[in-house]
Length: 187
Image 1 (spheres, rainbow, N blue to C red):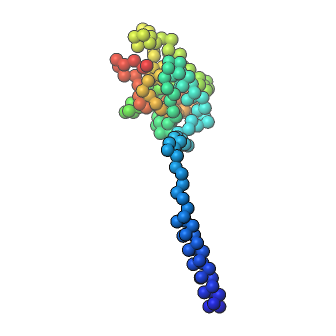
Image 2 (cartoon, rainbow, N blue to C red):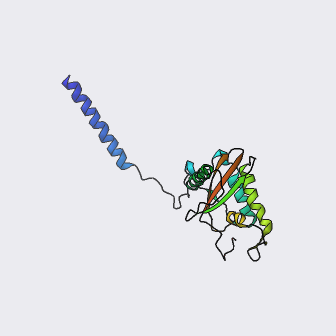
Image 3 (cartoon, rainbow, N blue to C red):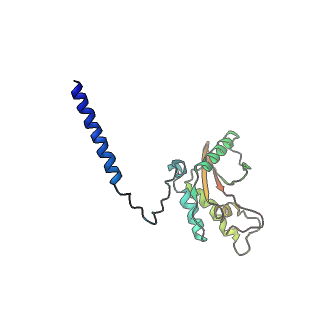
C-alpha cells in the first residue's frame, strides 16, 4: 500500500513538473496594438421596458429632425418618473410638476383614452408648429416647453412612467441633463 502511495505521489510530482516546464516555455499571447473598442452592454434597467416600447424612438425621431443626437433610456430616471406618476395618482391625478432638482420633466394627462408611448411624445412634438427656431420664441398663447425639452441639445437620457387614473392616464418623462433654460435655445 505504501509503495502504491509513493508511486502515485511520484507520478503527481512528475505531472506538476511537466506542467511547470510547459508553462515556462509557452510564449506570451500576442496582443494587438489597437484592441477593439467594446461598448459595455447596457444594464437591464437602462433598456426601454416593453410597456414603453416606442417612447425612445419617438423622442429620437424628433431630435434627428433637427440634427440632434439620440437619447438613451435611463432606468434611474424611469424610477423617478414612475414614483411621481404614482404620487399624482394618489392625489386624484392632479397635474403638477415634481420640481425635482437636476432633471427636466414632461407630463401628459390622457382623459378617457389610452395613448401609446409614441402618441404621448407626438402630443409634445406637435408644439413644434408654434415654435420659431430662428429666434427661439413660442407663438403668443401657445405652449412649446414640452417640445423644447424633447429636443434640448444637451439632454442625453430619458426615463418615463405611467399610471391609470380610472379611465384616464398620467404620463411622466424625466430628462437629464434638463432643458428649457430661459434665454437659451434648445438647438
